[in-house]
Amino acid sequence: MSLKFRVNDEIIVISGKNKGKKGIISKIFVKLNKVIINKVNLVHKHQKPIPNVNGSGGIILKESLIDISNISHFCKCKLLKLSKVGFKYINKKKKRFLKKGNLII
Image 1 (tube, one colour):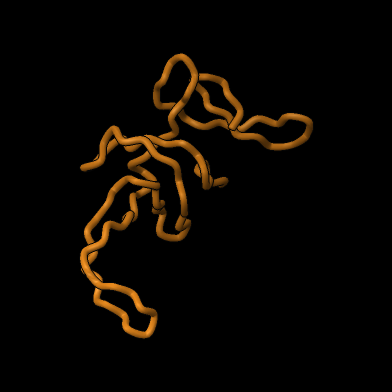
Image 2: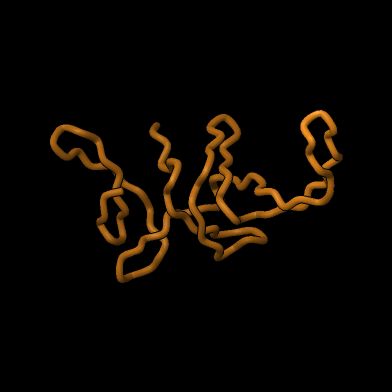
């Protein structure tokens, strides 16, 4: 089965504490079924200073993982709704498209 999410896809979170937030996928972990989304699901990390690298310590904001089942594609067409992904063959190549707006990704 082909993975329906790819890096740089625009998505929206559909459940959890970040419900309704939109973002772009920056990294995908296929075996864990999780993704990292830019500026979504920010957590505070207490970082110790690292003297060898001249890294300063403190509390930093970092993006955390979100399960793939909690996100959906966001259609930028006039509908501005959630959309499922389908597959079409165009010129003998498999392409992904959004079912609501019929837009090729």
